[in-house]
Image (cartoon, rainbow, N blue to C red):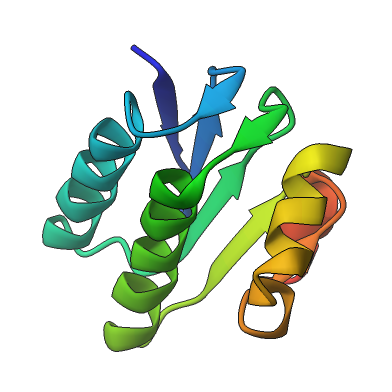
Length: 111
């Protein structure tokens, strides 16, 4: 499995175990997100510390997570961005929309 989910008391952490978040695996991430939402998980952290590249399909999955959390009154945090992923998010100006933290500990502290 490319995405590991760890359920905590008030939130779930999705750890991406992919070097490239792209059209090949973004649908799997979206499926994980929808499943969490159906199970009333409103606060989600996605840890991309193992991911060095993200294309538009990956960004779409990330935006889906943000939308699902906000629509259910929860919070979405993205963390562990590698330089190329951070650059892609900044180019697309998603850093203005997304809550981004440097690492998982910081993300948990901000929930």
